[in-house]
Amino acid sequence: MFVSSRTNKVLLSCGHWDNSFRVESLEKGKLAKRISYHQDVVTCLALDVSGGHLITGSRDLTCSIWEFEKESRLSDQPLQTLFGHNDEVTCVDICVELDVAASGSKDGTCIIHTVRQGKHVHTLEPAKDSDSSSRIISNLMISKLGQIIIYSELSPTDGRIKMDPCLHVFSINGKHLFTELLDNKLSSLLIKGNYVITGSNSGQLAIRDLLSLSKLTELEVKADITCLSITREHSHLFAGLNNGKFLIISATKRRKKLNI
Image (tube, rainbow, N blue to C red):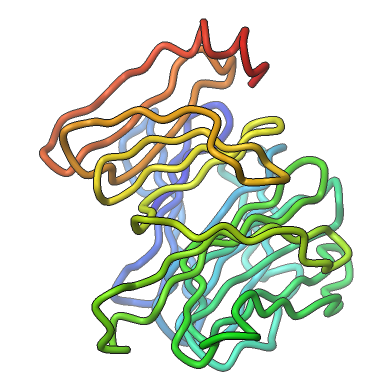
């Protein structure tokens, strides 16, 4: 797992054997910093849209918020350490402008904290009324307007043939707005403007409405989608495929239509 800085001069990575996350200088081609703060493997990380703050999640059940100044200057100690999960943290996101940090876990919960003070705000349980004991939170994102998109699926150890994946929308106040059942497992999730872009393990690239999650358009590719990214100008969408190919999709016409 890795993320790049806003200027693409620095790469941050996690999942290392020594429980660290690392800062690599892409200009110099060498390791700039290694931080081993968590007590177990760092499983996920995310940068705020401004690039000034980083959040990390770990198998040690905690998350940490870090100040990330001038690309390579990362504080040695976190601003906040966040607690509350009972199992491995699988995904994180942060929005400093809204003072929101979100984390998802194998325990089936999404926990919301404030960034500035690290206070617990909400614990969201997307599958509380069904089979939450076997459901995990695999991905989540925070929109600029405060909606929290959560992707959940049944645990692979559950033993069921149908994984029954779902997308959920919650407000910043913790109110459940909508849930959409999916036909296929998702491998990637993006939020751009009022739209959610998803890629699936069966090669489906879909654009959905942010609030209703209704599918607006869909593109079939001939391989499983492993990751998605979009240019800062929203002119092109990139899709990595499991066959080693890299798909570039022009979003110019779609941008005019959907205003993404």
